[in-house]
Image (cartoon, rainbow, N blue to C red; front, top):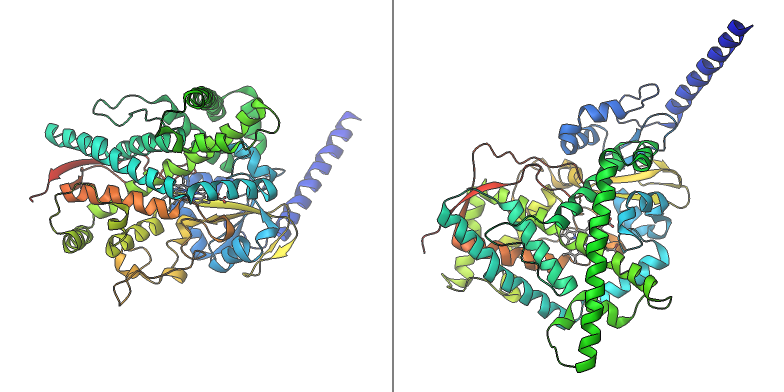
Length: 508
Ligand code: HEM
């Protein structure tokens, strides 16, 4: 009897598995790779994890720009992966209201709370309007420019001078990380921690942000049940995430508390002048999130600060690092950037150019767009449909489909950029009239497209150009032998092993 029951159970399992296997085959009509029984397409992906971005790019090109990825059986790892600009335009702009980040996104990006990056509908609109109104204030623009200017003049250049005098090798990515971290602290909190200094102090919060971002990437490539279990057991990458969140929360909440104290002191004696333009002060002044008491307001402020840190820190570090790597490995481009600087400003002794001045540099702008095309700091985006829909590429989506846009692969897609899509060619951004060529955001998607376009786009270009001109004016940057520029596995595209360089002073 027991043997018979055993056979019956085994037969039922076998029939169930075979049915499920064929059901998957029918449902997944545009597979990106081989769909193995039980493990789905995961083995193929994991085998190529070491070259994740390039592998995804190759596969998508072979499949006409769009295809499906299905993970292990009975997991929710079902992605429609696309680099088709018409799909981007449809989801990000034309049918914007039908596509959301969704609850699963918020679960994966839990550390972001209810901030602007994870929010949908009314919460997103509220955050968007709030940040938009803060960013567009003239006083904020002036404060931002002054902050960047001072940081370049008083920290970045002195640190690089020191490195040059010592004749040592420096990790430029680490330098930019510290630079952007100090800046974002000044801009958001009104307080510069001075991480960018010649002794390169260890920065715990910095590491915590990186851990959190790597964990979020990890949550995209392992089944939900696996990372949930890891989280519950507090092991592996999830253990690091839990520890990182404690560090980050302690840091942000203590900043909120001390800012509140500063403000009450300021209101008492009405003196101070400069510290009240930072974003946290502005958010507190606006009293947003206050309605339901101090604890509620603190959560709102914590989420706002966390989201601004991620928005304005790593993205700029990534953009600057890849830009300098491309310029250092393309001497002709470097020469043209210098020629333009010389043409516009002569051998100006001024070390840091102003926001207005850097806007005149057309070729530099082209070189930066080109770098962002090839190495978009946020390499992928994710959306889910509220109602079933058909994308312009003909692929059907329903509310359970996760749509992944691969920004890195889009930047290398011949259909958009032509046969030379893999080449670093700033000239493609320069028009015959020596202006910059406009490319719609659904093709050049580094800053996202549609109503959720990056709010820091213009200020990012200004900051990057101020940094780039200040460094290139003084130094020739040489990548040291053996330093391989390899993307990391995270939600922000940094260099896995940093960018190790040596500096040589330019003849003036
Ligand atoms: C090179 C630098 C930057 C790049 C490439 C970049 C790129 C992006 C991208 C791709 C998004 C969409 C993210 C998503 O929806 O998942 C985004 C959103 C956003 N960015 Fe940036 N960003 C940069 C710098 C900045 C800076 C410096 C700030 C300001 C501090 C900023 C503020 C924002 C905000 C507030 C959003 C949310 C917009 C929304 O959802 O409505 N970004 N950015």
